Length: 135
Image (cartoon, rainbow, N blue to C red; front, side, top):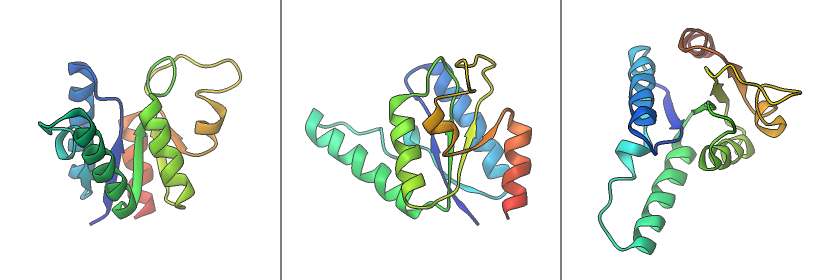
């Protein structure tokens, strides 16, 4: 079973619902998925301790992951998601970006640094197909 870290914005009900749907798709092809909104962000403590706990859990999960899947929708990539992509890329892990949003940024689909760091997919189906090919 491959371990996947799912990097995505998680600040609205719609984003969390999309992330859960994507998690279900990935689990449906036999992936074990770490989803921060479920596995690291539900912490009741003072702000500094909460931030340290979330950061540490997410970094450890990226370290453990075989693959990072990142949701790239929106006018610009979520800043936390961009950091997670960069960290995974620096570790030499494969990063798959899912962009279902049809808006572009002039010369590219997303920010140049992000676009050059990911295998860009434009649908759930394409993402699943590419992940299944990777084995």
